Amino acid sequence: NVTGKVKASEVDGLSQHFPLCMSNLHQSLRKDKHLKHGGRMQYGLFLKGIGLSVEEALVFWRKAFGNHTDDKFQKEYSYNIRHNYGLEGRRVNYAPYSCMKIIQSNQPSTGDHHGCPFRHFSAQSLEATLYKNKVGAPQVNEIVRLAKDRHYQLACTRYFEVTHPEMQSGQVGTIEHPNQYFDMSQGKLPD
Ligand code: SF4
View 1 (tube, protein in one colour):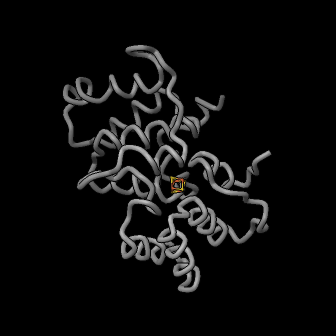
View 2 (spheres, rainbow, N blue to C red):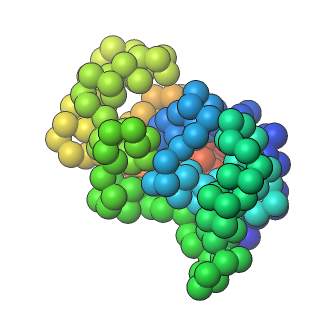
């Protein structure tokens, strides 16, 4: 268990290693100073998975929701954060969501930023996001095609390979979990 390794102040720097689903949530959070419930769950549990302790999670979300009063934050959000860490309610220590879960359940609606960009973005916004992340045109076409053909995790894997040319192809396997993506982006290969 790596919980406790990462400080709230380190999340911005580490976000360069996030898969698109999580960098989308991170950027939306920074832009709006808010995330809806589905986004807080998906992103909060991912952050727990990268090693944010509950204390650091409370610091992170309090700062991120800078427009809220302390009172509103305590009432509406801190319970849920503690709940994700198994400190409230039924005291279940919730696991970060897998790709399958993100792709198949809880479809995002307007104003939501959770979900998987390869599954839930329009082809146009996926394309724009890939170009923004400096993917070349032939690879953008290839990745968008994979996503259109419903090979979402393969599209994500291809995106990983293209943006991590230092990794040898064949080393990557298939992306199954956002936290696996994060570990591999830092050079930790699966067993
Ligand atoms: Fe995130 Fe998985 Fe989708 Fe990649 S395939 S963007 S890791 S949910």
